[in-house]
Image (cartoon, rainbow, N blue to C red; front, side):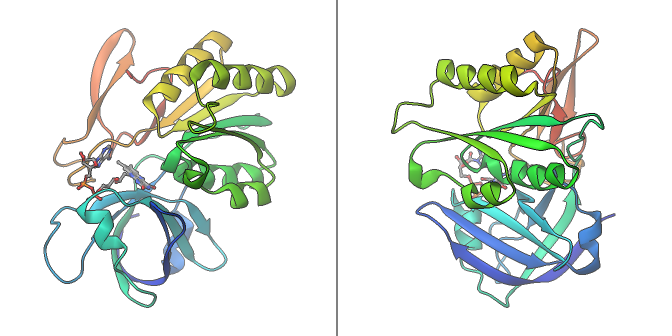
Length: 262
Ligand SMILES: Cc1cc2nc3c(=O)[nH]c(=O)nc-3n(C[C@H](O)[C@H](O)[C@H](O)COP(=O)(O)OP(=O)(O)OC[C@H]3O[C@@H](n4cnc5c(N)ncnc54)[C@H](O)[C@@H]3O)c2cc1C
């Protein structure tokens, strides 16, 4: 169901040098929101710039409070303008949009692999998985310790965290692969869910193919309409040996990791 509304912002605060956290009241519509989906946000109520909405994944879904939360990196004009919203202001949202993550019924252990703000969409998945009694493991990669996100929330959900950073020299692929192998050896994970880095996604893709696991990826392509009309955000999928171009906003943003051409 489509939600297109002005919603009250409960908070919009800076949490580290480059990242902000926002909570928005969405009322009864919260029941339609699933992890992996995103909302398209109008970044300014005062003028028409930037004209295009900016997509943000759902970071946390609070069914009790009827709110959703976003975690965002301040990148360009749109996200800079988002930081100007104050508590009590209205946010013009379209969503929830896109295809959510799917969890296998029999899954007992899953691994989340994220770089930077890629953890936003995977945190909502962790929340959902934990509610279903699935144990989550996560590899969080970031440039610096200051760039690590969602650590407190993931820890409170009982997610087993493995942190790697560029500044400590622990984020290179060989080391991340060793961590993946150790987790899989110990817990026999059933699936890997990835977002936020092409290098890590390629590694996770080869790992799921090699180990015959489930794999899903949340892609973050540039978007224009966000609703499947403009075809600005296509990516390639390998279907029965044929390459198919599909829209990230409509057929995604969550795809089978084994099929996405990276
Ligand atoms: C489905 C989806 C979910 C997303 N979820 C989140 C989220 O939860 N948190 C978050 O911080 N970001 C998320 N993003 C990315 C976010 O939408 C962009 O960072 C934002 O639109 C940038 O807008 P801007 O006006 O600040 O920057 P712009 O001025 O539009 O761009 C600044 C720079 O970033 C590049 N850029 C812009 N958009 C993207 C993109 N989608 N991918 C790669 N490079 C880009 C531009 O080329 C430019 O170089 C998501 C993107 C998608 C498609």
